[in-house]
Amino acid sequence: MIIKYLGHSAFYIESNGFKALIDPFLSGNPQTKSKPGDFKDISHIFVTHGHGDHLGDTIEIAKDTNAKVISNFEIINYLSSKGIVNVHPMHIGGRVKLDFGIVKMTPALHGSSIMDEGKMIYGGNPSGFLIEVDGKKIYHAGDTGLTMDMKLLEDEKIDIAFLPIGGNFTMDIVDAAKAVEFIGPKEVVPIHYNTFDLIKASPEEFEALVKNSKVIIMKPDEEYHI
Ligand code: NI
Ligand code: MN
Image: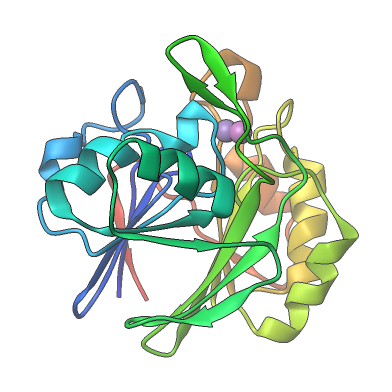
């Protein structure tokens, strides 16, 4: 399985025919050289919440590739109104078997509004995703504060977790290290930091706080294989 970090909270995941983007914020993302047009044969797009730095280029990429967009019911309704037809709505706590594997939508403590031509649209509850594909379990936390709910993820036996560490809008390094303790993933990749001034954080300081999980500090546009 190839995991490519596209900076901020964006990932490209490839395993056999599964070619997925999570939170594809590429245009305007100062951390990546990737552009929406670089992804021609995407099979799935996961969107954790409606904020622009996560919804990102979903509409353009979905239209170009006909990838199935998986998100909460409200964001899917919004995307449908924009002409996206290949969609899968779900909601927090829901687990479903799809063609590639299994996905569960997990809670996140955050906001989820969508800005559309200067108007704020309700984007449902923010979320994270547990994605099981080819025997690997990935957890993308989305944007969230530290929650006790994360303790429930321990039983999921997660292989690799993507956790925000930038503070201000999400967990900081101290809370993210606590989250790692709750979740107990084999490996953890810090995300959502140093993209903007408000979310400056040191991934090395985060690594120093983490016990019992391997911290993988990924540079934007870098690949990691599991
Ligand atoms: Ni957000
Ligand atoms: Mn964000």
